[in-house]
Amino acid sequence: MVLKAGKHIMCEKPLTSNAAEAAELAQLSKETDKVAMEAFHYRYHPATQRAKEIVDSDEIGPLKSVNVYLSIPVCRCMERKANHKNEKKKKK
Image (cartoon, rainbow, N blue to C red; front, side, top):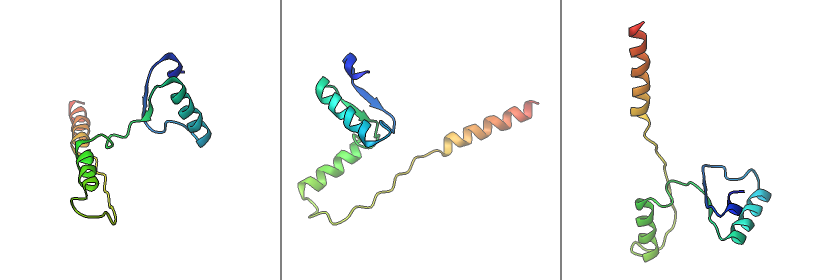
């Protein structure tokens, strides 16, 4: 296993298939003093860190609720793919 080889793990979801595997991985991570984590892209994002600073500082008062919307811009990627397909058709 990677942890036993002295390497940290950052993995795309899912990191494990069930709770038993997660517990085993957590224990091995402690034993080897290596990090095993899923690659949550927002966790270390500057906007997320700033929001946490604001909440922790009590700057806006006590937190009562949170609504979050995750948006991933795919339009340009999809447009390029469509344009590429159209160009191929024109060449035929």
